[in-house]
Image 1: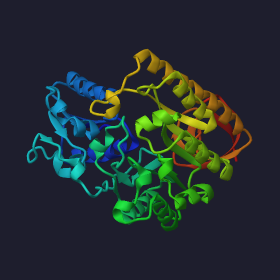
Image 2: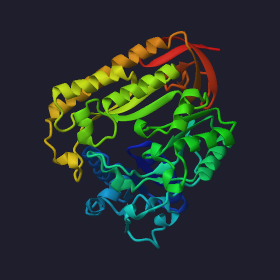
Image 3: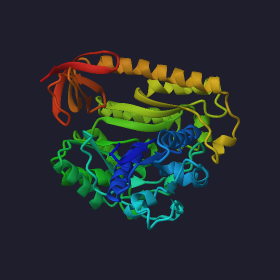
Image 4: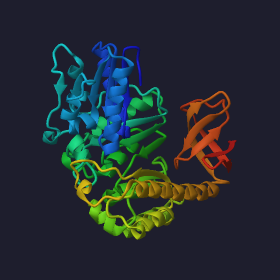
Length: 419
């Protein structure tokens, strides 16, 4: 994300990238020039290393540039970045969403408040998302849980929901701007609601579908299956405008590791959840986050995670080699060696690839609705409702919805005849 005067480098989750749009707009409106903003992630030790590396690289490439670090990296480790000679300013996660934070004449060089003291979400400004075919809407931020590997609650604060009326209004605006798919995003989206007196995420989804009837496609980002409310579950099964794709925060497939992670589900519950949805809505596809090489993980424990890929029919995997995050309980547990972690991550990805091949084969003969995301000279690309990448003829433009009868795949993308 760049302008002639401001460059924003986003790391980490979709929410951080969405907030990066606002950071860009605020910085440009403030008239900042020759500025690089590192919107960093803090989820792992590796993520922190990348943020530091990006700051050094930016200053090395342009010694006269102003380098600002923000995001979760700045929130959790402000002093570390303040001490870096390459970093000119450090702005916390709450401060980065305030226009005045970029008025350099009136704000301190470093501004990081106690994010745990916040009780309300700060809705993002209505920044256009013209570069995205799928638009993103923040519905909450923060997390009330304390998984032993995770520092993010201390970077984002406790769970805080955006009021339903604000979310619905944002969705309406994006549809008016031409978007045909909206993705609801946050840090822990299935925790939505109780802090503002709402029944749950299902109530929000129902309101969007009812009050924005011209929206063809609504999608959920990563969810925690143990938190999904009955209303939402019914809509995932029966509502055709809610896309048949869920990305699950599973993390592991062994009960002892799940317990040591302080997760709130068992492997049996995960398998039963996926089986129930697959039976009720056969076209649904699942993605998942999985961590390889968590402290104390034995070969037998890891094998349970490998088996979970097929047992839950996990088609789209995000595999994370465990990287100890300082100041988390897991960082103090007995660690596995680097080569073992690397090998297990590779094995998980291989299992995911094999499951994806089986799933792609099962799509042959199906008719899918595809949102075109990218138009090229020789072909266009899009995503089906169940999140498959799809290859299309080049005449289809980003933002179009087309129907495709699947006749083949190349191991990564589906192809076929547009109807």
